Image (tube, rainbow, N blue to C red; front, side):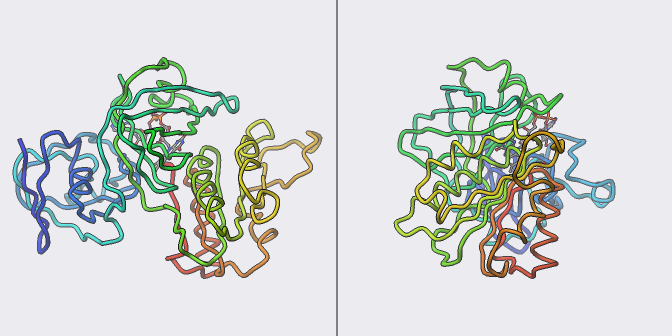
Length: 335
Ligand SMILES: Cc1cc2nc3c(=O)[nH]c(=O)nc-3n(C[C@H](O)[C@H](O)[C@H](O)COP(=O)(O)OP(=O)(O)OC[C@H]3O[C@@H](n4cnc5c(N)ncnc54)[C@H](O)[C@@H]3O)c2cc1C
């Protein structure tokens, strides 16, 4: 059964019975509902229910603090309407999906090990794979409660091929299903694309990509798009990994036009021993930016993805220390 959702003082939209939650229903209806991770982790899609009934899908979702709960806040990505409803939320055009997200069934075609805990997964849908470089899809994995967000590492294509680079998280249900259980040929639900940290091809500024761990996936997609343009600008690609054995970016990047010239690769290791033979940079990836970027930071567009501590360090560096305008900063926090 479908339900009409009215945004207090704003637009109304219909959420159909096959929508997993309010957020996806809103975005699919073209509404600029604020959001970031779409999986209960960040709190970006908080709203208040003014009238009507909603089911809460994940009571303990970390995106809501105890204070939020006390004040009656809910997460749109963890709420499903049970009746017509009125909600209070401040929508924004910047949240309107640039490519309409679609629910489809994907088949797992191949899995290729890249490092001890990261693998590339290739999925195929019957319809073309339509997304912008840097966006993510939500995968519903058999036997796993809740969707998982994974960023595409390839580019949009008419063959319906979606590629992901996924790290096995110790004790993680979704990444274990992908790495250990799902056989080639398995079918899973794919919903996407989502995300606002996509490549802006029309900018005249040089770009900087900063990837931490499996944050490599969306940054590869951005690099692939940036370097396949007719006249690519400069691109500095920073990749932070723990040890040399975790570095798997080079075989992807050195295939791209301009590698070693307009495309400059800066690997940084955070957990190396002094006698391990590594002659490159050591430390945290954000510490390397000031050493390698030759222009003032405000002259670049920044794209970055990875674990929350890396995102916070980069944000602090760019926004507070270097005053880079917010419109030039695009990131995904892998909560
Ligand atoms: C925008 C975005 C893009 C990402 N891209 C990548 C990528 O390209 N590669 C990569 O390796 N990782 C990526 N991640 C991280 C990824 O989504 C998972 O968090 C990670 O794989 C761990 O999942 P897990 O199931 O193994 O761990 P778990 O600890 O089992 O699950 C953690 C994730 O599942 C959700 N979750 C847990 N329990 C529930 C529940 N009961 N109901 C609903 N949701 C629940 C959490 O919000 C969290 O997202 C991305 C995350 C985000 C937000």
